[in-house]
Length: 464
Image (cartoon, rainbow, N blue to C red; front, side, top):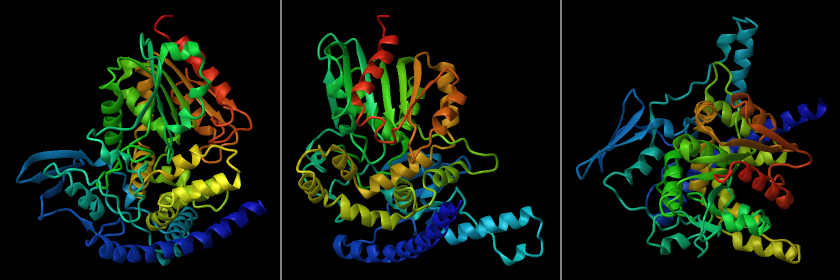
């Protein structure tokens, strides 16, 4: 109890300081962006806009559709639900505490004390933040993606290899069967990771029999690894799914497939399964981030508080809180780590005397802040209200086996999330692995995990 109270007190002071720091960094980056890139760059601290007159118009209707029009193009539509309100509605810790205090006073019916505090108000979900407006401008008139990296992003050949390709598709690592393909498997990595999370761990541990039968696809998601990192993209669910379909399903003529997904990838896996239920042979989810929303809570905001609780301990929760709540602090971290990832890789090899492979460092560093920021909010937080519907569709329409695997010591996504999935899909099999966490559920037990996957696939094989 004493440790928990100490954590709460330290966290309050640390994150209050971070609130101030993020505010100051906002103006610092505005000035630097203007000096280096010769234009003001919007952020989610900016004021709200609902119309543009320079290159088009954005209209917001009551059906939550953003309508983009211009003289050179017909009206395009983007569902506003694709843009999470957590991008532009993130209260400071002080106001959050004030609001919770007021709610407690209400609960205790202290009517005289209530007027002292003002309830924090949230912006309407029908407003469009100026940062979203500016990014959507690039989509009006069919403008091409901006392939020039920002000054704060890495410009190395690895991070920008996609700019040399004429194809607008993800980086896909293909392994296994090349002729007489009997089955297909798509691997989807988690947040700030890459296809190497799979290719450097389980891929080398599959048997020859498996590789002669199964064609294995490991993708770098949009904005990560060696895949495209467009500056104007909002990295919505639709964009991620479209790119997976365009990069794997269509060019390789995939008619049916198994899915293996980790963490954030589980959300994309569920959305893909719901979109193509007849094609799914089996669904394997590792550490799925599913928190049922309590009655009266806003799903997106509740999800943000669960995955990023603004606590200094455990460390992984502190990191998630920095990435989720502080746009400019997280950009600074990305500037220090991602832009200089070659230095960190060198230091890692030097310190460990090249005794460990650096694929985890590679995956952690090879992304842009824009990609990580929008994917975190629009996928993890933004889909929070849709997951129950996805799971119900999986329960009713998916014929293949559903397996959920979770590390017992996972401090980022607790084990309860896997059981929450099982509560919506009763036939789902949950396997809790002792002494494993969010990463070591795969890394360090790749042989055992490879055998588990082979068993799942064989049980759901077309030939059986």
